[in-house]
Length: 70
Image 1 (cartoon, rainbow, N blue to C red):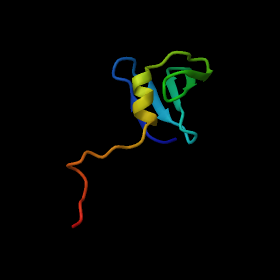
Image 2: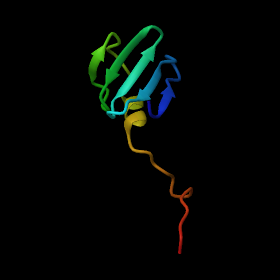
Image 3: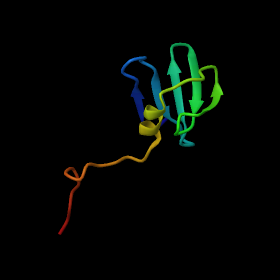
């Protein structure tokens, strides 16, 4: 799996799949969701769409952390 985050309230694990979707695991339940949080498959049918967006979106580097070459 790719990047992952744990939801601060539910403690569910959000993981980016190789296809770019998000697999959410909450206890014994699992579900797969699109980047916008819409359900694809699995027993778990609800998620936090904002966290799905964060996990599946492109990595962003803060402008002050970039190495600029002259």
